[in-house]
Length: 83
Image 1 (cartoon, rainbow, N blue to C red):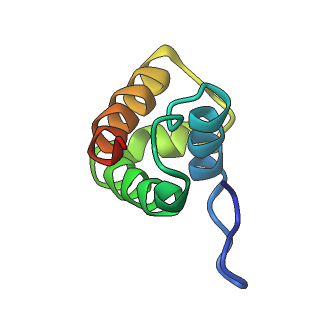
Image 2 (cartoon, helix red, strand yellow):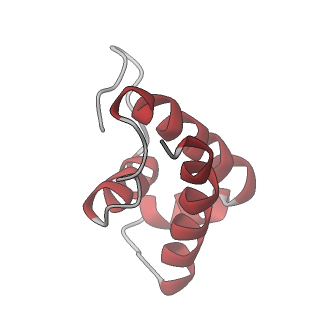
Image 3 (cartoon, rainbow, N blue to C red):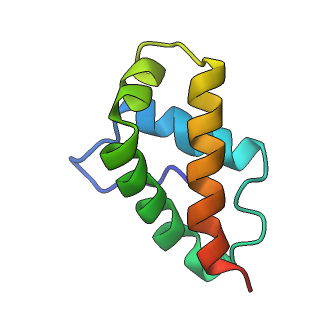
């Protein structure tokens, strides 16, 4: 989940969001060969729709609002990849 390109580290808030998805099984229906694509699409959606949540996560705060944003965004994205 957290394989990052060399010299382009992922911001902490984005790492937290991805780890939350992985730990809570939010991508379990995504085919293995589509996980990276799904992750990228999820992060794009989070950046454009919930930049404030990414920033809050980067500051070490996992609020109910952040959890809701993560879960809803991943549900929308992962739904496109169901096998």
